[in-house]
Length: 257
Image 1 (cartoon, rainbow, N blue to C red):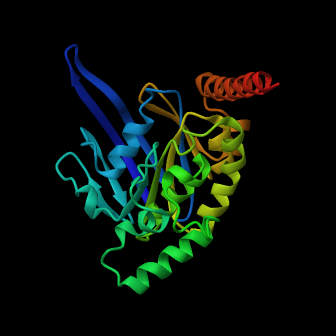
Image 2 (image 1 turned 45 degrees about the horizontal axis):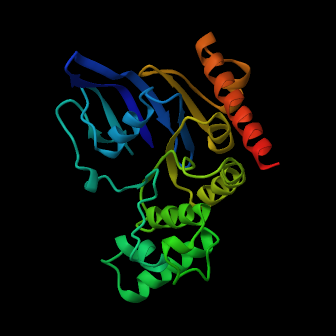
Image 3 (image 1 turned 30 degrees about the vertical axis):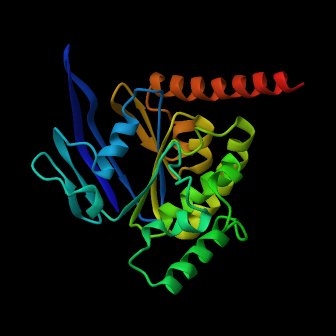
């Protein structure tokens, strides 16, 4: 479905060229959820943006269903890639209600078709009856569901999620991670997401890629990463992220008591 073939991406800075992504390769099968996991600044979001069509490649290729989207000499514009993307801050329109936010990208459909699609998606994300509410009237988790429904509305070939839980508190993130996987699996879509959170990646991903300093250190199932880490660095990243989240969780719980 999605093939990222030996891509490298660099930026020019006053200090010279900074290599943000170095020869990254992975394949994601149709209907699978892939997660790029790693610390801030490791290059995972840059890879996601390249797949979306927002970052040019220095080398390598990106293909979707055998169609070349990006190479050094060719870039299919983002709007022609038939992809959906959900951003960290959800980017909901504050002046539009839930129904209008979800239907925003469906203007080519008739009013009846648009209404039916919005109703279908509200049921899928568990927000039936919320049609007339505005974003400021929703919890963080509910806003996330609206943003997800909006990204699903045009029936994309591939859905990209950028740190989908970053704006939620720890307890809400843990609860929603498994719910989000169930919702996404019902769609049958192929999904690529980035996260710095070990628990989110392992709750959501069929395949997980561990990144560090622009390199993809290992791509595999949660079980293979757990039992057969490719290096000490992979082991350290997985252990560090997991321990960090547990400590944060314990700290927040302690402050509530």
